[in-house]
Image 1: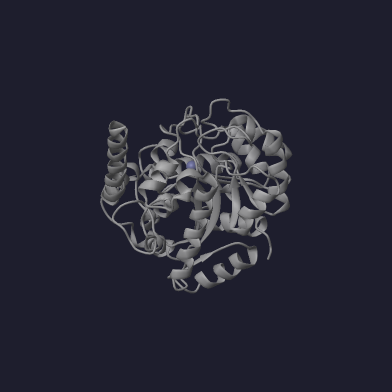
Image 2 (image 1 turned 90 degrees about the horizontal axis):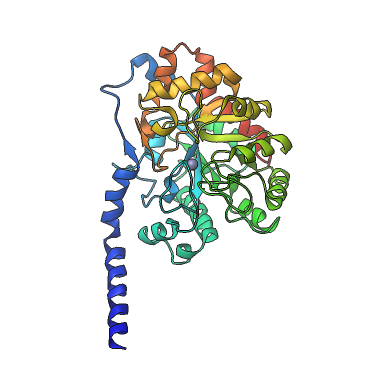
Length: 390
Ligand SMILES: [Zn+2]
């Protein structure tokens, strides 16, 4: 009996020590997980900076909500926060909400037997209810973004309708210190009941649904899952309900079978928020030519990433090479940015450094009109058409 009590006390002590020391530990971890490999010696040219400051810039994917950082303040670690969004002139940011992270995340094959998200929630000092429930983790992150909006003194707004987006666009074309965000569920592991769960997500502010993330789930297959299958019956029902609610489908991380099926049966344009292209970097994470064409044929949007695994290691040059490849294949009107900042990736600059993409697009011969489209106007138009009106 004494041995059991002593063991329990030792376990409790261990957890207390881990919990109490986690602020230092998570900073240490984050430096290694969300790296910046600075490929830039100096600033961008004056010409690039001047042009960049006139753009409406949108980024279709970043994951800072899973971080411990207070996003109202600028931090030396991680890839983005509100001050860095404003410095980089990003006027619209889609915030990913992951809820299931497998123990050894990779882009080849993951199962969900051992998952890390609950332990990470514990380390970040999130409420106990988020340690054991994916659904609670989703709603907690949505609430976090709403709290950020409330405390931002008007510098940050959450967009839920096309009317709000239109108003926001008009505002930021005149004011320079404001930005906005949209909520995207990264992996629909929390959807079990249709329509109840989707209606609840809608009420909490979610407007974009990524069907799968790093693992297969009961709606369909992931590009990095075990089965990598198509839509399940529940997945088909969910798709219909997502469309009925005027929410947007995101196919980033979808298996080929899932992507083919959704593209065949969806009645609204879809997006792939953060990806690379197989034509430049051939890996299981990136889109093949026929997939790029199929997404574009729905009137869809493809967000090209900023991280090494998706586009390569040459900084802005690699990012723009993938943008160029996709633009030439499907038309520049379907291409946007999907950085994956704070998504556990290595990038060449943080959100404050988006001017390097503008400069490289200029160097590689894109016209000013095309640069405006890629950097944000395509995303703006796509979301204006895709979001609910009011
Ligand atoms: Zn992702």
